[in-house]
Every structure is written in C-alpha cells, then in structure tokens.
Length: 344
Ligand code: AQP
Image (cartoon, rainbow, N blue to C red; front, side, top):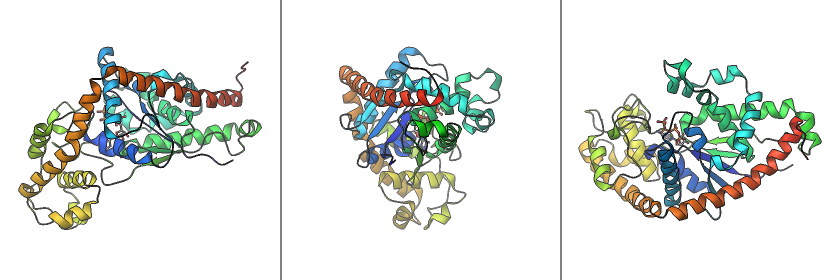
C-alpha cells in the first residue's frame, strides 16, 4: 500500500523561542508546506517534563503559535495545534513505552544532559520524553520530520519503535490491512547550513532557551537594537575569516556566525566565505547585523501583531486540534485493534 507523504514536527512552549529554533526548524516547516500536508504542533506535554508555571505555559503556547503564523505557516491549508488537545498522543505514548526498551532510552544523550548529576530526581516524563516524541510522529503516520540536529537521536528512536511495533505485530498489521506494517519509518529532515546554531557567547554550546544569559541567543521577539547589540557582542576570535569552509575547522564561533549568515541569506557557507573570506569580524559583523535585522525584525513585528489577537490564536489551535484529532483517532482505532484492545 502506498504511504502518503505527511510532515509532522513540534516546538516546546518553554519560553524564549530563538534563532536556533527558527533556522533549525521553523524555516524548514515553511518550506515543507509546499510539498506535503503538514502538522505543526506546540508540544506542551513535552514542556511539562520540567516544571512550568501554568500561566507562563499558556502564554508560551500562544507565543509559539504566533511564531508559526508569523513565519508563514498557513493554518488553513495545514494544521497548527497544541499537543494536549489530542488525547491520542498520551495514549499512543503508552503503547510506545511498551514497545521501546529501557536500554534504548538509557542511550539518549539529551536526558543525560538535562537530568545532569541529579538523575535520580529527574521526572519519569523527562526520561520517557523520546517515547512521547515517537508517539507524536507515529500518531499521524508522518513520513518526514523537519528538526534541528539535536533531535536526530530521538528520531532514530522513533524509527526503532516503529520498526519493532511493525515486526512484533506483523501478522496483525497484515490482518487489519497493513502488510508492510502500520507505521511508516519517519525520515528526519536535518538540512541546510544551520542545523545546530550555537550560543553567541560560547561556540561549543547549543543556542538554547534555557541558557541563563540572554546575550547567548537571539530571541524571535528581539527588536532591531537587541539583535544588533547581541551580534556585535558575539564572541569571535582574532583571525580574519578564512576563504574556504575547511578554514572554519576548530573555529567554533566563526563557523557559527558564518552558518547563521548563510541560513539567513538562504545560501551556503562556501558562498558566504566567497564574499567575506579574508575580512575581519569588524567588517563581517555589521553585514550580519544588517541581514539579521532585515530577516528577523519583520517576524518579531508580525509575532507581536498576531499575539495581540488572542481570540485568533485560540481559534487556530482549536480548529487545528479538531482536524488533528480526526486523523489521530482514525489511526489509533487501528492501533488498538492491532494490539488486541477490545473496542465497540
Ligand atoms: N540551537 C539550535 N540549532 C538548531 N536547531 C535547534 N532547535 C533547538 N535548538 C536549536 C530545534 O528547534 C526545534 C524545537 O526545539 P524544542 O523547543 O522542541 O526543544 P529544544 O531542542 O530542547 O530547544 P532548546 O532551545 O534547546 O530548549 P532547552 O534549552 O529547553 O533545551 C527542534 O527541531 C530542535 O531541533
């Protein structure tokens, strides 16, 4: 049976949506709309794997929705919704928990990083996060998942879970009309020059929402002055820019800024170095500021405009949730049959 192409991806509403989320994920969401039906999810259930203030969680859920819309996602043609509206995510996550092996979860590096030394005290939800993420994607039988590089391992786990489910229940998948297995193996789409944007203060650390220093990241809500200030203060080294990509090796900060420029200009690092190779940062940074402000300030302004219309945002999420639920419940019915749950 031919599997229709379908895109799913999510962003956590945990505050401070930044340039990494935008270039690593959201920009690619916008592109994927041309190719297949898409679901873009504000993953509020993932957010609570670390404690969230409920009012801030609601506000961040609206903010991420506004960012999706401001970036150019068409909520009529595609689906924007928040995860907790569709009960199937939690339901399928339980089934994924029963398919995934503890050994697989033990290998997840993001859990190790986030739980840190206080592992015993981390929530069970934080540990099981990748299994919920697998359920998010599999619930819609999504075939393509645009994400940043940091999510690669989680996507591999989602594929492993899909494969094991299909093989554990092969006879039953076939009985219910899916001889090749019920779940397609989702493809991670990690592409472009900015799959991992690094902190502006330390080129060896990922740009991240939870980093205490606001100077480490460009927030999508930053205005032109803030963008300029942060990029001008971004850490660099004393050398001029190299003339080829090989020359960026062992120069994490230079590599990061060139990658950001390339992604914003929709080109590649080689072309950026073709233009700026040999230049000092005192020449490159103002050009980067100009480009970043040109590309990002309109998004910040549009986010602000959309955010002021709370009724519109809530309508988008409600409508998206209903349409997502239609797909999810159809798939979940089959999954319940396959695993042997009685249903009327
Ligand atoms: N620095 C980054 N570079 C490229 N892509 C990134 N993404 C996140 N950071 C970068 C991608 O953005 C999408 C949404 O991420 P998320 O909100 O679901 O979770 P995250 O990866 O945990 O985001 P943060 O900012 O790193 O949050 P904290 O600080 O809480 O860990 C994903 O596709 C992700 O790959």
